[in-house]
Image (cartoon, rainbow, N blue to C red):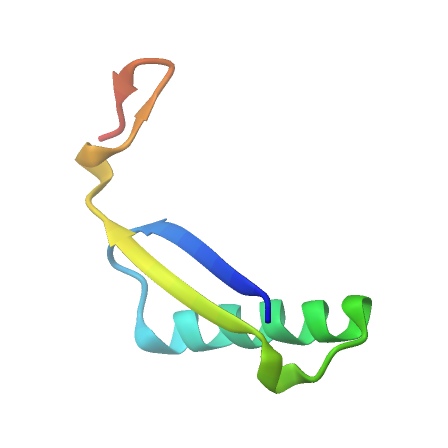
Length: 59
């Protein structure tokens, strides 16, 4: 069972997350030749200020 963790800046709508999860699950199902129902997608919403790139906070 594939488990996919997706970390995003907070603020994505439920519809956007639904579409992302659908696309990810469909792609894994097709490429890995496994049932669509076998894939779990978990979203973690994080404040932009909690992300740092090259040691610098994202604003």
